[in-house]
Length: 50
Image 1 (tube, rainbow, N blue to C red):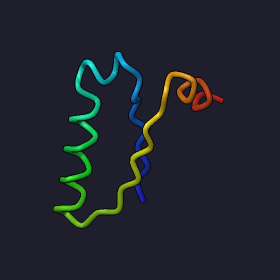
Image 2 (cartoon, rainbow, N blue to C red):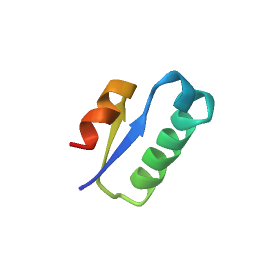
Image 3 (tube, one colour):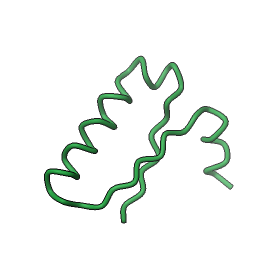
Image 4 (cartoon, rainbow, N blue to C red):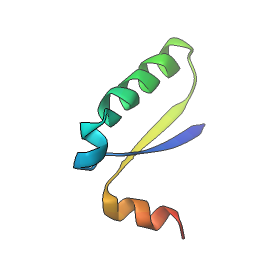
């Protein structure tokens, strides 16, 4: 399963992160591909680098 981390902080949302996450989810469903989208906050992003 592919796991994607897409930010959900206000800046990311202002530049379209919600639309990107929705489009990726729809396309994965259309192609019947397993996809796990994890929405991260600013604090969650710092944990990804460790």
